[in-house]
Structure formats: C-alpha cells, structure tokens
Length: 294
Image 1 (cartoon, rainbow, N blue to C red):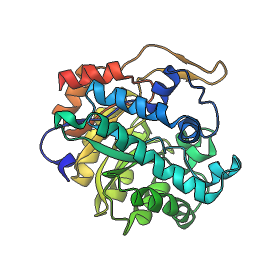
Image 2 (image 1 turned 90 degrees about the horizontal axis):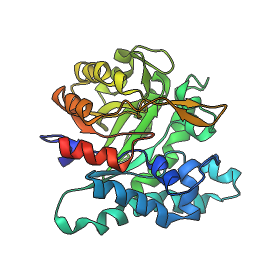
Image 3 (image 1 turned 180 degrees about the horizontal axis):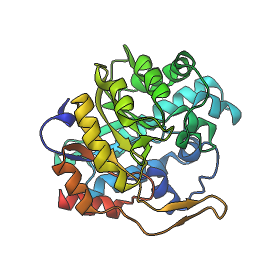
Image 4 (image 1 turned 120 degrees about the horizontal axis):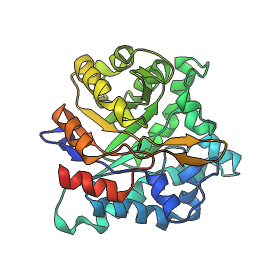
C-alpha cells in the first residue's frame, strides 16, 4: 500500500493523552474507548489536532475496546459492534475535515492486546497463561468488526509477547485489511522477556502483516529494535515510542522529563523507519516538531 512505499510518514501521538489534556478523566477501565459512547465529538477533535500538527495517520480510539469490556458496562454486543465501527468513522471524519489540501492521510484501526482489555497493566507483562488458540479466538471477532469498517489498515499494537503475536497472525488470516504488528519492548526483549528475534520472526512470513515495529516503549529502546525488525523480517518498520517519562502508579502521576525529540525521530528514519510517531505523553506539539524535521 502507498503508506509503505518510498519515504517516511508521520503518525499521531498519544490519543488518550490528548483527550486527558482536553479535560476527560480516562481512569475508567474502558480508557479512551469510553468516549466512543460519551463524547465522540471529542475524539474527532483529538484526531484533528494531530492531523493539524502534520500527522498523516490517525490511530483510532479502539485500543482498549473489547466486547467483554463493553459488556461489563452493560453494553450489549450489537451496541459494542457499532462503537467499534464508530471508532473508525470518527477518525475518517477528522480526515475528511482536513482533506482540502490534497495530502494523503490514513486511518489505522487500533487493536490492543488482550492485556489492555483487562485494564490491569497486563499488556506490560504478557504471559497471560492462555494458549495461542484461545487468544486467536478472542481477537478474531474484534478484528472482523474493525475490518468491516474499512480502515486503511489495522494497527495491532503494544503486543507484549510471542504467544499473543502468534495468535494475532493466525487471527489476521483472511481479514482482508493490511496490518502492522507492533511490540512493546524493554531492554532489547519483549515485555514477557523473549528475544526480539523470536518475536519479529512470528510476522516474517505472514502475508497479512505489511509492517512490523515497536510502540509504547522508551525512545532509547527504538533503534536496537528497529535494526532487529529489519534484519529478521525485511518488512517496513513502524516506531512510535512513549515520551520516556515514568508512571507512578501509587501517585497516579507521570515522573521525569520527556526523552522524545524530533532529532531522535530523524535518526530512526535514517535507520530505516517507514512510519514514525508517538504513543503515551506525546502531544500534537511534539508531532508538529517531528513533522517539521522530517
């Protein structure tokens, strides 16, 4: 697809971070997905802020959306299906709002890991104790619904371990929408502690995975993972780390200084990244600086 052709593209930053900056409390187990029901216009505004900053990819508010999570809020399956599709429609609406300049822009339907739906930080540990088949069957219905909404691609992100990656590759078979598969990593390994060579090898032979990469990691983890992804898969690489700040769960506050910079992003592109953006705590102003640099 055009997104993975020549040159580098700028993705958005932390959608939930921007929604929180707009005054929304996202401590709910549904996280940003709650606003699909309560304030969809705010999601459009957040997408628009990143587009205005220079991003050409909007990642939808479906990361923590799941049938099980919606059911716990008393939302039936038919309504949950509509909300998942709405996440794609809202990003598309924001894209339409800025389409007058003729620039190509893309909608990436976010698919978070099983651990995100648990809303207990499990996506940063992985190793859920579930089989590949069980995880595949859990992911497949949501993938089908999001694909039916016709995004430009599926952003399968923050995957913490090899078992879930295997399940997702199986679940993608026949979906009909290209996907990127992005791991969350730390110190050169998956969050579950597996070698990155093993993790990226899962996607290497999959025709359904158009690109691989890392997200929701420290900026310092990007370059080694990028080199590994290229060497193992030969596929285009996407990178969108967090700001590098730390999260104090007891105080529910971010600590430390940001490590995200346009200079680093330019280096990642020089190292072969096809898509560069940000995750948690990366704001439109950061993306604007990145877009100017690239």
